[in-house]
View (spheres, rainbow, N blue to C red):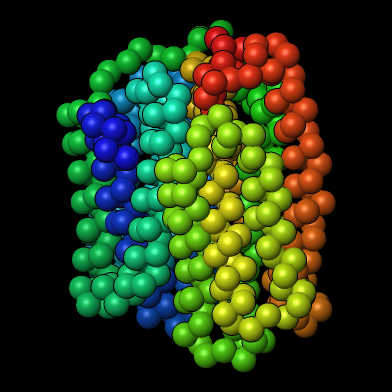
Length: 409
C-alpha cells in the first residue's frame, strides 16, 4: 500500500476520510445514547439512528450530481464545513429532539455530494488503473477496520467522555478534513457539461449493459447484511450469550478486511475482474449454511467467509467508477450508492419481517442466501458475457479497467 500512499493527493483524501469515518462511528453511538437517555424510548433511539442512513436515498440520486456541476475540491471543502457546523450544533446540550433529527438529516444530505466528489477526484488522481484499484483496497480495509474499532470500543469511549464531547470530536474531524483537502488536493475544472440534463448520468448508466450488471453485483449486499439486522435473535436461537451479538456483527467486516488484503496482495487486477461473479455468488451462498442451524463457531465462520468473499465489491466499484465518463462520474456514483442503501434497508427490514413470521432467524438468513444465489448466478453469467463482448471489441483488458475505460472516453 506504500505506493498508493506515496501519492500526496490520495494520501490527503484517504486521511480526511479515515478520521472522519472514525468520528462518525463515535457520533452514531453518541446519538443513540443521548436520545435514549433523554427519552427512555427505544423507538426514538432507533429512529434517530435510521436517519443516519435514509437521507442518502434522496441525496444520492439528486445531490451527488453536484460533483459533476461544480469544481470538486471546493465542493468537498464546503460540504465538510457545513457538516462541521451541523454536528457542532448537535453537540450543544439539550438540543430538542426534533431539531436534532433535522440536523442529522442535514449532515447526511450534505455527505452525498461530498462522497461523490471524493470518489470522482480519487479516480482522476490515478492514471494507473492497478494503482487505483489498490487505493480502493486501502479505503475498504480502512473503513471496515474503523467499523470494527467502533463496535469494540465506541460505546465505552462515548460513555467515558460524554455524548456532547463525542459529537464535538466528530465536528472537529470535518474541520480537519476541510483543511487537509484545501491544502493538498489540486483544483480541477468542472467535469460535467452544461448541456447535460440533471439525471443524464442515471440515463447513461442504465443504458449500458456492463454498468447494469455491475449494479446488480453491488446491490447484492442488501442480502448479505440480513444477518446484521438479526444478530440478537440469531444469538438467542443458537443459545449463545448476549456477548455473541457483538461477535456476529464483527464477523463480516473482519472477513472483509482479510479478503480485501488477500485480493490486493495475491490476486492480480486482471484476474480479479474475471472472478467477481464467482466471489459474489460465494458471498451470498455462505448464508445458505444457516439452514443447517449452525452453532456459534460455525455461524461466525460462515459470516467471516461471506465478508471475505464480499471484498469483490471493491473491484466492482473500481470498474464502475472508471467506466463512468469523468463528466458523469459523480451522478453515476450516486446511483450505485443510493441503490446499495436501498438494498441494505430493504434487506434488513424484510429480514426482520420474515423472521417474525417464520419464528426462525437462522432460516431467514438461509433464505436470504437462496434468494441471493437466484440473483448472483444470472448476474455472474451476464458478467462473463460482458467480458466476452469487451474482449472481442478491444482485446482482453490488461488491468481491471484500463482497456475497458477506452469505450467511454
